[in-house]
Image 1 (cartoon, rainbow, N blue to C red):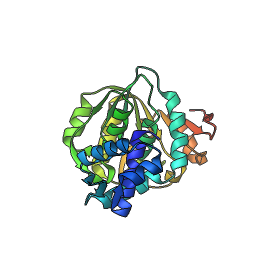
Image 2 (cartoon, rainbow, N blue to C red):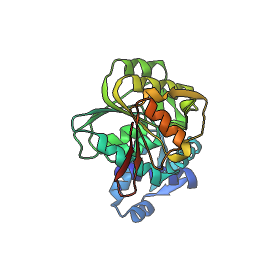
Image 3 (tube, helix red, strand yellow):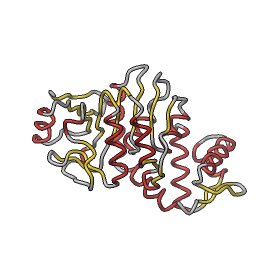
Length: 262
């Protein structure tokens, strides 16, 4: 397990039970107690837990963290399939922008050993990149707890001055008419600017998002160059994306892919 993954699991346990102990975590994760102490210190520095003798207690923010972890855990297998296929689009030397979605985070967790750099606006993304020793820029702004991300005018103004090779993003919903939609309007604006600043734009959308519509539209079909999903989309979606000039890739369990014309 990567350090970032272990810390997210420690945080989830703290949020659920209220208290975690070093000796129990070391046993469960099969690591030295000093490794767990470093994990807890890092989480405490981020204001996510409060250190105690022999362990840590959940921060009052724990309820928001549980909500985030549930979102991160949903459709985990689909997100991993999508992430492993997306990894094949990345070239050595690329500068890559990621939104704060848990699907993008799944892809970031696979970047260790790749000679790339990144632009992110999420705390977990920054932690994962730091653990993987990937150079990155963290875009700052107003902190949004449920997504553990930064957004707002300060963040979007920074993105406008950056130019990336690739941008990966996800959304809460996708339909032909509404395009890619999300619920939090500040996140919507961030995704729009992230895509506008990239040479190539890739949507990472699992099959549960098709047919769903959230509050704000963050991208139209023509704003996306590639869509990667885990199951064959409906025919009307395939036809509409093809007409818009986008490529649809269906990730396979063995990391092979079936690619529709587009």
